[in-house]
Image 1 (cartoon, rainbow, N blue to C red):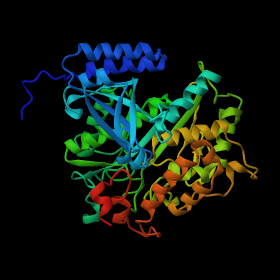
Image 2 (cartoon, helix red, strand yellow):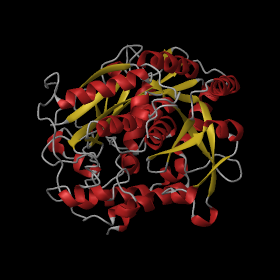
Image 3 (spheres, rainbow, N blue to C red):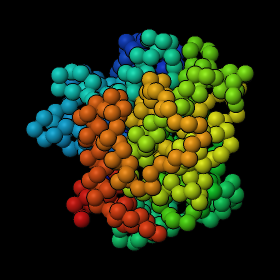
Image 4 (cartoon, helix red, strand yellow):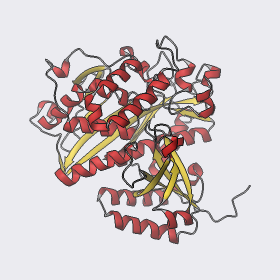
Length: 476
């Protein structure tokens, strides 16, 4: 049915960028929640061309879910938006299924109509339990509460930027079809930085970068990565919750842009054996006012003692955190030392095999880079766990901790056991969430061979938490 005659909202990319940057400035300046809510409600009420508001939330594994609410209904009912939590993996059981969605009015996005449809805007939601409290399985809410607590008590702002690598494969739904086809087809073999200007991979990157720019991402650089058909589109630093939201939006928009072009944007950590896998290098810093607490011009590698303590804590709990950073069977193929894998539990300014790197920085840019995070990790869970560990953890009594010959697991089964046995994980997540996350990972692991072998198995793709659907999950 044609919708050309309908007066739905479809803004230019320039208009979108202006609106989204203004909304981002409100978040950066910590404009009062009530003021932002009033501004957004007034806008939605007055903008007659908007038909629906898409509310986004993520499950415990990090899979993004979208619910479209009629705009008029949402404006009248935004304080009582219920949904069935029992249908979301890792959320409530069937006998206690009702959950509610709160609206985070500050996390509001205007979106390109050619990618997200006409007449829609996006906003992130917070999952609320039956009793009105924050839901423990909603890691976005957990991260937001932790970040706000540190800001109110210590004046800390947690900052993050993620370098998210992915692959572009031929055909739509290539992951869902992998169990039948047994292969992914590259659409480009140009290699690192090298691709013709109108190559399909370059056109995909250019298109996705334009969408990001329109959504206020404030892009920095984009390029083909080392492996064939691999890409990376970098954007600026942000406050930690906004940074995690942008990871979810990055994956959503690139998948839709790819689908529009007849391709699949894939974030499996190692979808093809024999070439580099995909990572999500996570750059982190902590500021207090305008001061970067990780910067010390007299410190080792110009990193402050506070920054080195942060690293030491992360190295101490590396095995505890591994399942959070690498939450799939396929992720352990990436931890292969033959392909610059960051599987060594150590810190270095230069060695890219280290799970933590200290990049060159200055008073503004000094940061810690955690390289062992896979692109299929729940961004809220990963950022919360690493920041919480770096700030509140302790340092193990291990000789030469920063250069010790220790390694991350080479299979998910070992990572699950480390995760389940960790008292630190129990402390920061709670026993209930710890158990539910471990059960989800075990269920997927049990459907795959215990030996990874030399080629990617259909099961590790089919039952991946970002790929499966009810039909695929039951086809076992």
